[in-house]
Length: 270
Image (cartoon, rainbow, N blue to C red; front, top):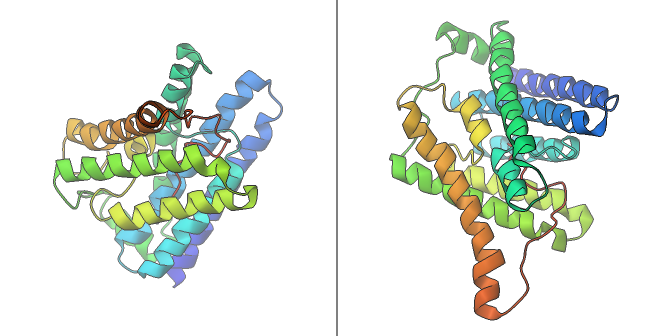
């Protein structure tokens, strides 16, 4: 239980550090503030997921505790991310919808990946302090991460696709719920996805998060991880948008479901 509380403390410090950056972002013009918010929130997402993954891989956390922690941390992310998306697919979607230029989206994605790399260095420095037995054991293995896939490459890619599809659908329709229930609904969807697909692929369904958390792991090549963690989620998002905004309206003659979705859109949290 001590290890659990240490990990909770690490999560809290990561959130507070990111919140400091978000607070400093208010001092800048809106154009620059958007980028700082994206960096801070992506850094927070990756740091927290690193710690949760390490805690889960230690096999010392009961399933109920793990899911409750996932749900709680997701709520924290949704409450603090503000307008940040922390997801390259959201930036690409905004380009397709005409709400952001290709150049702005490219800068945003580069900053997301920079924040993901920074998170790797940050958590390694935290783990090197040996604050818990889990951290000490991970340090003794030189912070090595082993094969994160519990199935074949195709199975893992399908899981990532399915999780991204479900998450995108939830984001596209969450505005139909009472405002007080929206964050809880998204947190429940993320938690359910982690429960359903976690053992096969880790249920990351976010390319930049996977780059930070899963790509350093041994067991597969870089291209294989790209197939699972980049192509899978992108296809999931694209297929969801096509289904709800093109195919269903075409078949039933209804209006499109697409939507000026609230700021909750596209924040993959764990």
